[in-house]
Amino acid sequence: MVDFWAFEMAMCINVAKTKIMSIGKGAPQLPVNTPIHSGSMQGVKPFKYLGGIVNSQANLQKEADARFACGLGTFAQFSHVWGNHHLLV
Image 1: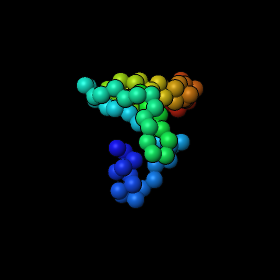
Image 2: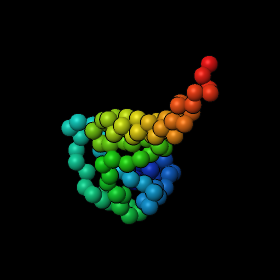
Image 3: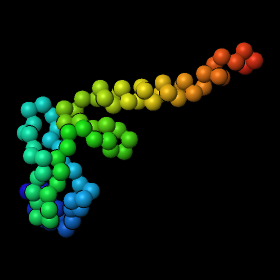
């Protein structure tokens, strides 16, 4: 089905780079590999896309946790600045 619409729009699917996911509560469970004309697309649950974590339940908790941990790590790197009494205003 996906490859049919891609062909209709004169697009080509690169199966090495393309993953497929069903998103939302009650969404159908996809097989591990979804066959298309040029091969098969791998089904995934969570994955990282443009720095953000996407999962099939559209739940942002892992994304929020990852961003919080990143911010906390960056904040900790400046502990020598926060404790420096010579920088008091």
